[in-house]
Image 1: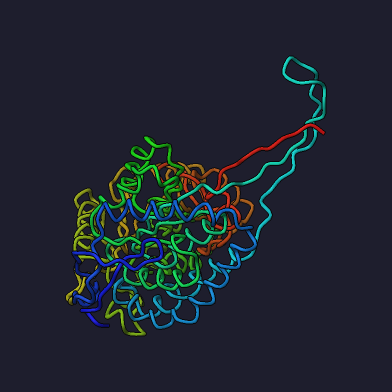
Image 2: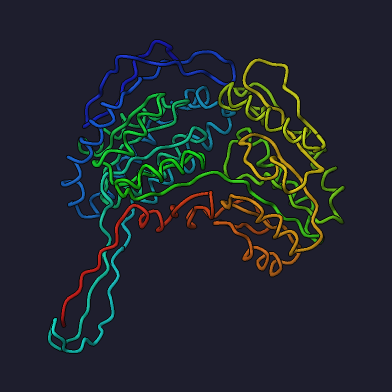
Length: 483
């Protein structure tokens, strides 16, 4: 990687240089790996205007043609993205295995492929009898419900899986006839710039625009301008609430996937090894920087101590180290300031009386590392039991039965993804139905990648993925006539 490489933003099909730049730091080594362009609010308004100008011609193309563009984009990305692995690894701090198999491949390409296939979005209305009135003569009224694009969509994405998150937003948005302005997280935007260059060679000018900058004013400008019709945001609940407040002034359509505090309920008859394996697979995964992680283990009291012991033992195999090494399972968190926040989160649990079973200390190595940490003896009102760490921190609490477990699980402002492990699938399903959570997995950590995804309560607004992703980026229009 060339630290002095010149990076630009993309507006209206043109690469635009910026006056200022800022450093991108490798979380694994703390070395500067590049200097990202520092866009301004003026750039944001220009990008929104360019997307608006491109909207009319893009949305009038048949969906089949728009999907052909997306398919060509998938081919073009797949041909070159293998060369992005080292860059993505360095700017995200992901372990090399995660960078290779999940950051730059897998769901990243799959989301373009899925939305390259046209979906039938229109729905006929059954005829109804309309009696004669002062408005119209007696008739049968029939009609169609169709989907229209929302318009210009600002896609504001997080740092944990930059390429995957951008793909999950822009692919359905483009398929539905929207144009987009991509605003990636400031911590790791360089691969998104490369993605924008590929997309710019495929799509008409202005259909895809890319803004990069460290100032929150760029995102605020996109939220405020009337040229943007919809905000698709993934990030913290606090920022999401601010977007809702400000976006309401111009009646922005909103799709927001926000924070989570995933509960994992274990009944007394569950397979403890399977549950512990599921927890462990996500505990250190991307250093816990994943909103769907089961970070609250709510374990039946009969198996509470054995579960703590099993988690303690499995933590010994969670190798923390240089993220570039193939054997490393746990790498750094994204920034020094985020490491400090996670450490303060752990300390708050200790101050409130939680017991540190494993972890809790800062690893003695360069980089922004947090050791996988397990906190026991927690009560449901502790900060660590209610708030998101977004790091490799798991808390465990006992429950005394299914109703108590549900009560503990629902004692949170969040409701994104929950899990139930039980020896009886029917029982697990019945527990799952009672959880205030947009998604529930039974006896597995794996999600259904094309199920509707989104949260209850402070975890978000709306649903995406699968067909629901297309609906999210569209407006409903009813057209009726006499027959």
